[in-house]
Length: 165
Length: 101
Image 1 (cartoon, rainbow over the protein chains, first blue to last red):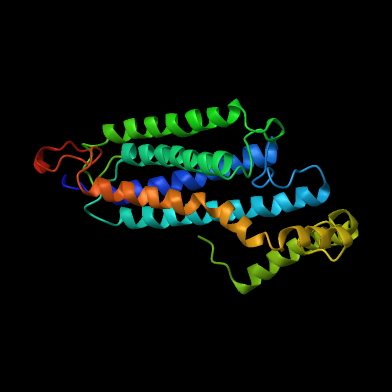
Image 2: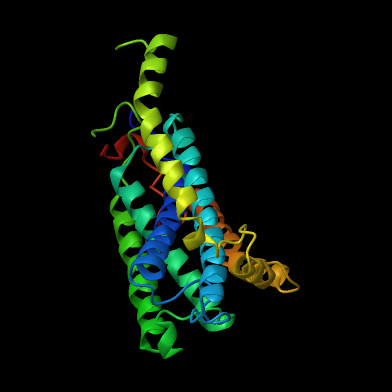
């Protein structure tokens, strides 16, 4: 049984999961632990209790949307695993996770940091090198790494139940 | 595997109950320190609500959610492209010769 060649469903599941999970990393590390920015800190400077609370509300909505994307990725992963034409490939899944993480960072960085300017990576600095480092390291580099891993999995063609763990 | 009966649930509930009561009591006693929440009926809570639910709410909601549909659209485009035999799609010309993982 080596003719499972439809990587699309696994690719989409991994990409959505990667995007959702990296959104949680952003929210947990940058918003909550390091507190270098919040989702709306460019609009509501978190220098008063009221503004901190307002930012917390929008951070919560950001996390809710990441959660929904993660759940959608899980559902798609489950459905992909039930299909005989989808290869159960670790390299495809890992590659799409990393690619999804990079793609989400790139989209979020371009829109939120540069287009809408609702926040910057380090809010107290405004637009800074951190914003460009975020795009390059968190976005483009992760996309390239994910893409490279995806390519190594092109030959994987064993469906779930027949693949090595 | 042990089956959870009504009796075992009651036993567990009786063990957890003191902790729940203590937690609730602590929360109520410290209500003054959490009075800035968006659903708190306090002066600060009202300011927070006013700062969220105003004429900027819909624009803020659209701005904060904009990356998500764009990302999902890009992911779906990637999936469609891979299904059309893109560079990351496995070769289907020699299906019998592809290597299993």
